[in-house]
Image (cartoon, rainbow, N blue to C red; front, side):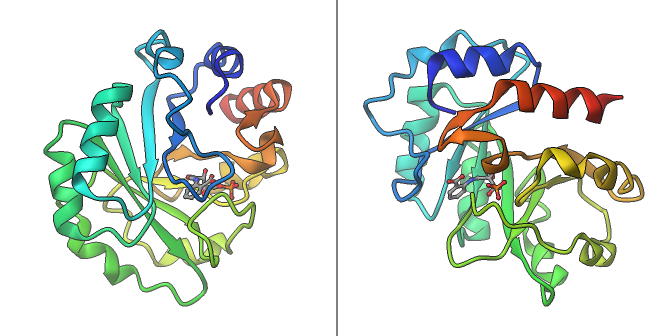
Length: 200
Ligand SMILES: O=C(O)c1ccccc1NCC(=O)[C@H](O)[C@H](O)COP(=O)(O)O
């Protein structure tokens, strides 16, 4: 999100998290000209989540402070040490992993102590926001020890399939490009329909 009116409209749907992309190669990039005051008034129940790709500790710390973030989603090849440092900044850490048919779930082990959630997104040449889904069957190989964010090309047509994943430790469903009218602008009616159906 980055448009103030759109944030407010989506906030009325009571999402648990709202994401702000601080990766300058993304079409959703929240650059310096997007004033933080637009998000200070969001309900406290919504975790203000900054999304970063391979950024330095200092840049992440400054952004947390400037935008009063509650959570950080690390979407690049961030080390265990960096995740640990970010967590010590007092925010939730969501570590994203790019998944394909060959994904090795033992890669997660080193991160278990330094993040709150794993996020499984689709492996692509970029780092996120691709609109592509991965084959969720591979998640049967995951040991479910830590709750996960399910992500990658999720659309309003996926609700029934998501509900069939009850055997997995899915804590959150991360929706993005399939709910946009243009990059960073969410279709409120579409999100509303999705959220209602998911909560049924
Ligand atoms: O959305 C982006 O442009 C983006 C760019 C780089 C890293 C992460 C990004 N998005 C973060 C997300 O968690 C997305 O919601 C996730 O990648 C799923 O996006 P989509 O496939 O469009 O549903």
